[in-house]
Amino acid sequence: MKLRLSKRALQEDFQGDFVKMMLEVAAKGNLISFAGGLPNPSSFPVEAVKEACIKVLSNNGAGALQYNSVDGYLPLREFIANRYKKSGINLEAKDIVITNGSQQALDIISSVLVDAGDNIMLEDPSYLAALQTFHLYNANIQTVNLKEDGADVEEVKNVIEKYNPKFFYSIPTFQNPTGITYTNEVREKIANIVKKSDTFFVEDNPYGELRFKGEHQNSFGKLLGEQAILLGTFSKTVAPGLRLGWIASPVKELVTKMKEYKQLVDMHTNIFSQMVVAEYLKNNDYDEHIKTIIDLYGKQCNCMLECLDKYMPKDMHWTHPEGGMFIWATLPKGLDAIELGKRATEAGVAVTAGEPFYERKRGEGTFRLNYTNSSFENIDKGISILAKVIEDMKKSQ
Image (cartoon, rainbow, N blue to C red; front, side, top):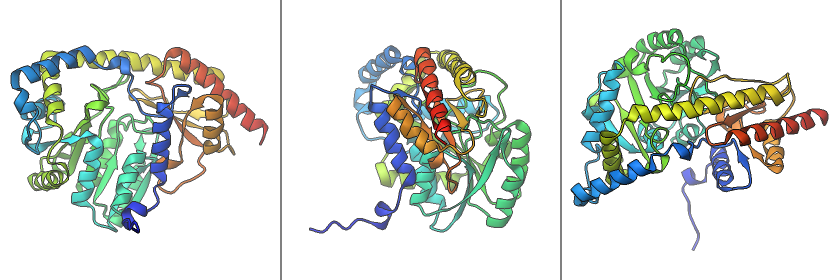
């Protein structure tokens, strides 16, 4: 029999190759890995989730194991809506669809908004798995550069006026991969531009709760109302293995179409996980739990920044995040980040080269560092090894 795969399955997947590499690296125990985006497992509320599982099965075991609504578990959606209201975003439970992680949310949004050849707008660099998803839908991706205070406002204006994109996908708070956060001033300027268009602003916010210094910035949900589609997840604040995320929008027709697509694909998100998380949230102090994560990640980030200052060549530079999980570093001129990745792996340290985070750019000499899943000892050891590899590369130029 001749296997006849679809063109979609056969199309090149530059980002996908790097995702596979990062997952393979994460599975190896003999490397110090700064490559993935893994939360620290010491933050997982194992005992509290265990108790929640027992309560769910004891109180409504049959319901937890039965088919359920595509919308998602109502108490969980109410919890999410109430947190939005506390931050000035007027959303109800009916505006929220629970997804199989926020990754599925990207697929759902693409399926209901993007036809082949449609223009969409992304930051450059952007989340590599988002690029991967949008490529599957054959979108024309227009990019805007990132500055220290957020997306280049003039470029956003120009792209909207020239290409009329269906949406602007952005991670404006502790951006992946750069760690950059848009200032309120930039947010307001971009919101005013978007208001004059038919472009949705898709705000992906997986890291927003993880601020360890500085001040919280306004959500685009507050600034744009119906023009904002909000994505969230419990992967970074409870546990990624539960695979629970969500999409939120007050536009009824859009939410209806998203639910229709999701029901076709998977009926509904794992109801047992939803009920367990809802039970956990009901019986535990979620904000206090997040504070423990913030305290840990802040210390890990400071440790990595101190090690970068201590060991790295003076002609390198990197971002200084106020939260989230990543630092974005730029190599000395002329050095290749993919080559760095290969040599660093051989030396016992894994990093992620910047190339897959860009739509078109190559050879930028950038790479991403994750600090949340390493001990202080390994951060120091790993950065010192990485610095030596970079110095050796400089000498061989």
